[in-house]
Image (cartoon, rainbow, N blue to C red; front, side, top):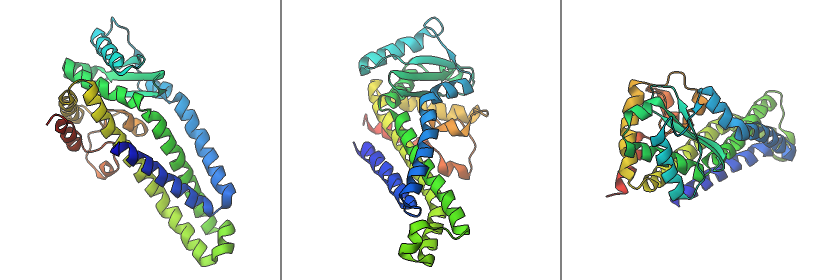
Amino acid sequence: MEIKLKTFLLLGGLTVLLVWGGSFFGEGGMVTAFIIALAMNGISYFFSDRLVLAMYRAKPISYNDAPLIYNIMGELTQKAGMPMPKLYLIQSATPNAFATGRDPAHSAVAVTTGIMELLSENEIKGVLAHELSHIKDRDILLATIAATIAGAITFLARMAQWAAMFGGGGNNRKNNGNMLGLAGMLLFAVLAPIAAMIVQLAISRSREYLADSEGGRLAGNPLYLSSALKKLSAGVKVRPMNNANPSTAHLFIVAPFSGKSVMNLFSTHPPMEERIRRLESLVS
């Protein structure tokens, strides 16, 4: 409940940023930005599953291809009261997995050949339970909502930059004066996109923690997932997915990149040590 409340508050924060940005251009500016972002992310929402599966050349797998995966997924979906998602295999030595799809009836789970070679049966169960939890909680929908609002904020910020350069400001200048309106517009243009990105990352991390917790319980033992995460974290460092697209990194159960840099501060995934600690605390 705490993580769900945090997600709600973070989405509320994005909305506040959007309304603030729209105030510089009147109601029309805010609505225009929102419609553009909504259209872009609506397309992504309905077709992102096909796009991301095609991006990684994921192939549908049958029961004969991977009976272990099918048996585990069948057990988990029955336990969770969910329809069976479509299953896909990615030819990659990097051990990883992700879920996609807008709801449980239109969902898919993809695993790499690397994860099947590295993990034990119980560890695979923990991973698949984690991905099912993402599907159950409609995390793709939440991510799309966050991206829609953040996209509108970024669009407004760019409008504010141009308006400030050419002396714009809409009704705000009339109401608050030239200097005050310009200062507020510049502040929004600089800080709003950064704030929107940070909030998006916070939402992504919150949903990872929630999927870990729910997935650990669904698997029957949170230690299955914590053990899997330890192996996956080490495995990705040895065999990173160099061809992974940064825009899809948030989908994977562990970040597919191994490099340590300043960009890790903006990772879509929470610290691995904290994820493992929280899982282990569920059985202590």
